[in-house]
Length: 149
Image (tube, rainbow, N blue to C red):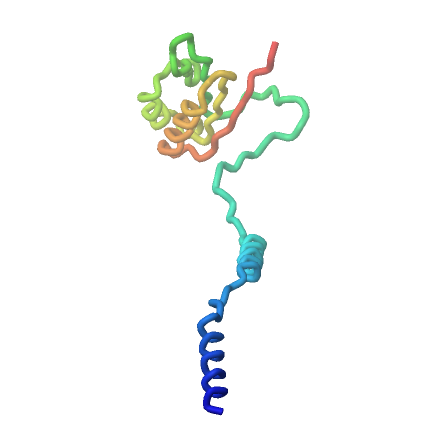
């Protein structure tokens, strides 16, 4: 009988030694991660990026009336040049003297700035003119196009 008990103990000891280590199934964890990802994607809201508010004119014929205010015409850059020629109310100006021109303009003229630019003018030059106008206290900025011939 003692042998029978020893045999049972050795059989139990070998079973304990032969036990496999527990394994985790990754499938449920991956499912949970994907569900969390979908939840956060659906519940996230994006705030709009601040930009320029542009009020476009109504469709139809352009107005023949000349708008009141300062007008800056920017021509296409010449070959080899990076900036176009700028004309402020029939006077050729450079970018560094434009601020003084805006400040010294009559009060009724500084209520609005109208920018006319040709197709090949870089946006950088237009934005610089807009920045200088804002620094000079001109709040309203409009854009005009020249009719094609």
